[in-house]
Length: 160
Image (cartoon, rainbow, N blue to C red; front, side):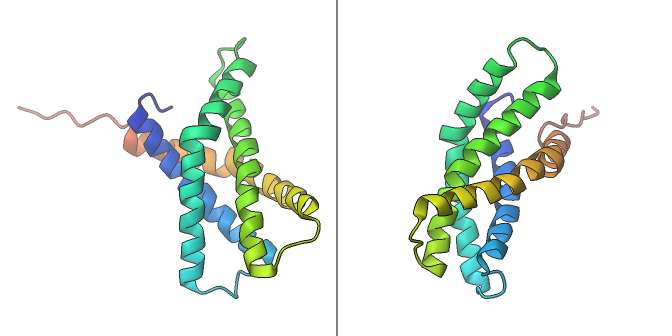
């Protein structure tokens, strides 16, 4: 999809925005804070999550996921397998790291759990169950469609 660094950043911005937006509301629901937060608290939570996710996407999880996915699909030329492999690797990596962020935010609102590791596993599992289908079935196709239509669109030819 993206072929230049600029396109990678644009694609990453769109994907992170959509995924973080949905996952933020999902985690508010899980934590029981959906109706209890002010708009500004929710917006600040989203902004912090978005910035963290974008940094992870561009500098850590994204590059690692692409390397792993390319190794896993080295014996195929089918683009769908490469796209799915990248998507799954991205979701696994992002869910791993963003669940840490979610656990920290939950602890700020609900207090620190005595069993932090078990709490992390529960948060990670719930996030993975939501993020994987969201990415593969909804956000991935939607962002690719928007990216192709508006970013990769051919410039109009001017008549002389």
